[in-house]
Image (tube, rainbow, N blue to C red):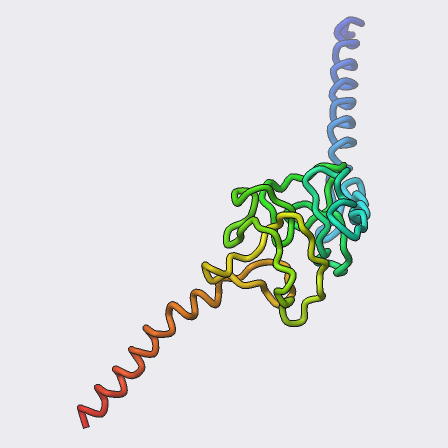
Length: 187
């Protein structure tokens, strides 16, 4: 007995639809499959070139860039207009709210921990090995030497290590001497 034409069409149509669904599913998903260790070429975006900040000689040269100061770039040691975190501004804007060493400030809350906002002393010697930086009459963030903070050797931030060592030294020395005296009394 022959199948009616309508039933033959539905059988053929459902097979065709099933075939189309398989092609679409496997055709699209096969591009996502990769071999172990092989990266997907669609995800490799070229890295943008590094952002270079504008070179400067004084803080006044950076006045057009909001929240920047003329400080030494930690990458190449040139004077540049950098944000408080010593990074160049992105699209002319700085993300950092706190200011690092030698950045312009208005008051103490602008500076990072261990720093004060003051006019730099022209007679103060530079840190050992640090390049001499021009002294300005602007208020800048400086290491709070009264609290034991000192400028690091590269002149990029303040370090409180001297304060910590000097605090523990008497305790360690006392323990050491006590141990020696206790051993002498036992013999």
